[in-house]
Length: 180
Image (cartoon, rainbow, N blue to C red):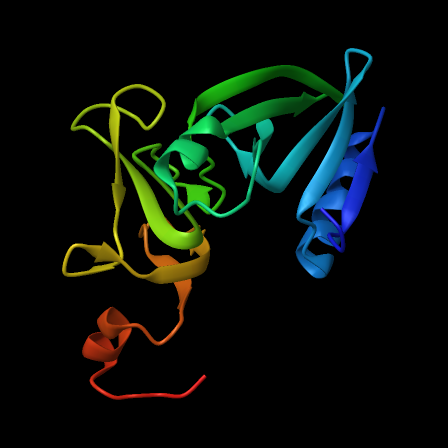
């Protein structure tokens, strides 16, 4: 984790956590360390979220490394921890796979990209934490193309933003060649 911006959270008030949230947006925090039940927990690429019931949670992954290799990707996982009354609640594992690009408001889609664009899509009438399938979205033919810095829109549209690195899929989409 050399060179990553880190923030340490311990016994924070709600206003302190709001300041950390603002700082994380401004300084691109990619790693938080939190003290919970006497141990230090690393939270890779944390994202703040307000659930339908009004609870504030931090969604984080256990490892944000390259997601190209299926077994390595599945060995990481996506978690959340509730924050209420100035304290963190119990850690809750959501699912296997490091989906740090966002979870849709209706819990039907999660996305990530740290080499390839992966999506976790809920089955009809379900959620990504219950019954969902994992898939690779950005392909040319049957091969995944490089896509990084994936982020899900927060407006309910489920639009997914990512960086393309001049692959065939991107060139076909924009109908022209570009240089990076």
